[in-house]
Image (cartoon, rainbow, N blue to C red):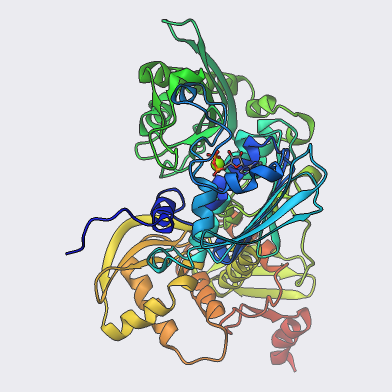
Length: 592
Ligand code: ADP
Ligand code: MG
């Protein structure tokens, strides 16, 4: 038994840190909030190794007065709150004075700041909560916080960190959410030296939403606007933002993003209000996309109910519920009615008009077309690369041809496509060709995003040998990158939670057995490549599948611009070419 003693300060700080900063993403969140509270108009966020190595946030906000720097790093020191009654009128994101001290207690922190009213700034280094160095320094007005080696002194926390990919994804979501909540502020997010998101600070929510969802999805969004009076006070609650047309939906509710007074909130009641508004317009089990800004009087909401402030409490939940439901309902109904008049009604809501009001053919995706663009948006990660060129218009430039233009004649044996080109006859193996095309597309996709889109599935368990368990364990990261989400569950059991979105559900455990085979292979070609080839081959059409003309044309069009169109990635021939000469010789033979 130990005697009772008051804990030393640094232990208290470490415990407190556990509540506020449970992971790199929470550090990013707290520092963004501080920068926004300081009135920043430009935030630059750099992350290395999912935030574990380094997180650096630079802002052009007010900065910290030199004689308050130490105070800012002290627990329960805040400039945003003076008394408990202030809690009822909060206009700032922070108020507890816990974040900086907590973060500094569990990392190597460097703070460089200059208050805009002072001519000299301050640089201060803190390791595990202890100041190791402080000095005046020349710096632009604003603040730069660099957090390195997070949790280096709390091994237990370190052990429970999620994978780098998961953490990146969380950070992306946080940055994008704040970018949407603060459309006047410019956000730049860089992971490992690569810029993956940027918002322009135009002040238009639509401009940010288009960056977050991608243009194709944005075109299927409806703008909503609603207001509800609080009877007792006469104040109003407003709801503005975007929700998806009934044609755009997904399985989970993760893309229903709700903000209350500029703060992202998780509130199953309000989320339900959104889905309710679609009533019978969505199939069971399907959920819309939504980005909604709910604005309520500050004294109507209590934000001080959750350590990370993710939940809030309203004085009267019903009014907020009905405000949300009505605003969304009105938007959706209004859209459905106007759609009867104009097929492109949705584009008229586009707030910035012109460039985005291009007609959009919702049937453009044929069965066989790998909806890669959609897949790219379906995952939780959305990298900036493919949306950065939005102003230039839709679609990427066509890739160079690698085969001549082919005319599809038909299909034979439910396995081969017959085509004609300027140089004779082509017989195309549909499976090999489709595997080649998909492999190419997946490789390109992985070049642009750090993770393949996943399909979440009802978890299934699979029992493996201890040896196989070791093999799987060793490769969980790369498997997750490719879309397979496996989780150890006991000694030799795994939970399968997700598969690459491109794969059909079918026999899920079979996927894992095949993966095991590939992982155990001795081969000189890179593992990721071998896995990608496997995924492509699994997803490709099989021999024996009847294809309609559009399917065949679409496949052939893609093959024509595929590098290495002549063989599948596992070396099988994709096509047999007979030149007109060869054909003629064949037929002439008998005549000689
Ligand atoms: P809180 O945000 O709850 O006040 P923090 O520990 O996050 O607590 O920050 C403590 C104080 O440090 C803040 O109240 C603010 O005065 C100051 N501060 C923190 N970050 C910044 C920043 N980026 N720019 C200006 N001041 C800051
Ligand atoms: Mg704060």
